[in-house]
Length: 253
Length: 253
DNA sequence: CGTGTATTTGAATGCCCTCAAGGGAGGTGG
DNA sequence: CCACCTCCCTTGAGGGCATTCAAATACACG
Image (cartoon, rainbow over all chains, first blue to last red; front, side):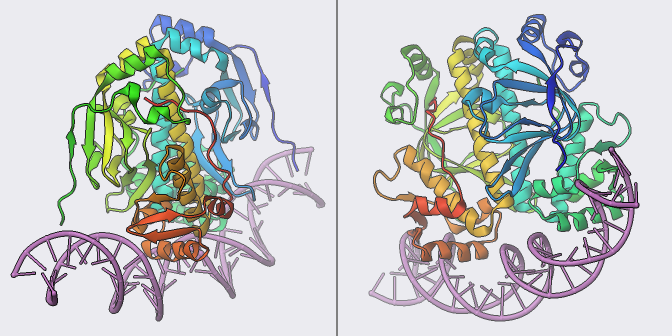
């Protein structure tokens, strides 16, 4: 068994005011006060290796995180080891909110690539709610956005065929990635294995492989370097009958 | 085609202070100030018939609701009519938050039985966030709780067998119902058809029927009067390998 | 090179689907 | 009071999608 990746605090290199994510057009602009609070709310940064477990089911994590860079995924396990991937996490997403609000995590989060995260202290969450109702509203909004994505994923796993599901998933991830500037003008490269796809779609690896092959044959995606290159998001969207992400601006903590 | 049920505003019969739900041990106590605000935040009540659509995908609902009585479910449709039920709503649950925060609903909600709902004005949500950080926190908590339930449902649909799925679902609903006093000391009666179960589990009605029959043969549930009577929650939990709901107190708006 | 991980393919099985039809319960109207 | 309708549950048959088992190939890394 290979050594699983770890994670280490790396102090504070990115200031909130000059955060590269915050410049992107998907994120709503914060006013100076809000930005000052967030900047002060931030406790430091965490660098995680690929494969590192950032949060784990059953633990009482003391922190909230916002992803600055890299890819990860949220998942749950059944006792016999069956795994369900619930969603993917990308730059700008927040993780650990469940633990922050309710004390105990009910899912785990693992890094798919090296990641950089902003750490926030959960003890100071109430302070945020008291002093910055706009930010409090944003956090609810973020939780609600996650719920939306889950609704969509559940619809897909429950009611779409294997081919539709795979097309939806890859279109969904690629769309989200584009919004936060991953892939630039070129195609999006998603650092996942077919096992990840299988565990997201509720399928076996073998059948996932055969399904993905169909997508490859249709030149919608490529599979290489241990990852997926999405060639034709719109083709995937059409195949899955999925209308895409909404265009609303979102907050970034 | 039968006439679908409707819904009508019925003024205001239940005062928040004497709300029967609020007396239950699952809900955390509110202080006087909070209660006064909620009471004032409440705009009226809505009575809905069985089958009524309370919220619908794509609409811009102006209201948030808390369920006072009755059963309902949240769902999404694919364009060709395939339906996925995302979760059930019971007394004490809040619906319409997505619409309240983001403007547009991405799922629909339908009544499974006659329902009574508290109506809140979404325009005043920001007022709540500004003046009552504790309540704002509660709303985030509620959103996060919904996310938890969805995670669990997704795990089930993605990774459990048909029999496990059915057992989990019925145990889950019955457990939630008991917490809000439905069924009293006796067994819980869930007003759903096998079609609802099928659309929740991602199965066909035919196979759902055969699966439920196994649960009936094992004397875990009964099916009658167009609904399900849960006889043995613990038996279902054991079959599904599900550890049950957590015991944390929750807020009630 | 050897080892480990990921992808690919084939074969056999089986879970679950669709199609089809029948039956029971409750409501409505003649 | 019975005929009829509708909704829901039930059952059987046959087929297909997806699974498991098994093994081969490819690739990266030390």
